[in-house]
Image 1 (cartoon, one colour):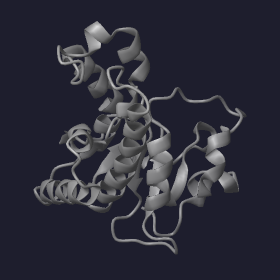
Image 2 (cartoon, one colour; image 1 turned 180 degrees about the vertical axis):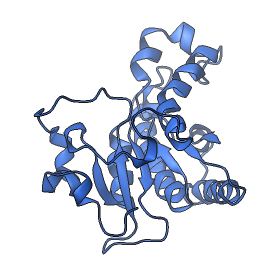
Image 3 (cartoon, helix red, strand yellow; image 1 turned 60 degrees about the horizontal axis):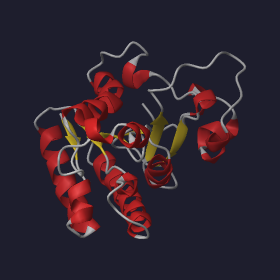
Length: 220
């Protein structure tokens, strides 16, 4: 089951605590019914051209804060998340007439297709259909992937569109809370010896400079 939610919560000024509570309940019910769940978190509303400054900056901050809170709630409830952020911003900026519907706020069918394509790798991985090994592929430090607490992973993902966050072990916790793995499935694999991205340095796995061997004992 794919859930994409958040933009209307920001524009309608729904309290983040209420918004993520509803999301958590939905994910828990879907998981209890046996469904795999992928959540596309709140997109960056600061990319909307009709929104003038300084409201665009406010919208960006509110969007990122909600996306991080959604990540924590959804992952804790058993889903995996994919941060959208401004991932689609360039396409929507270059071709607004094609990507937006007539209200210039909601995506058109082409815009929704772009959004669906952004989360497709994670959906396929959740179903065990992705050729990279799906959820069992260890995080690759060369691609900026790693292992962090869920809260830290949520903050990293909100600032890095396209990042997937998934709990390593729904029943296990480390010293900083539940562990989560960050993956970037939409990027091409790097060649051996490629440099580690600078943003990876905040990750527990990346800091130690290895991959599968660094997954905490609580991991699967």
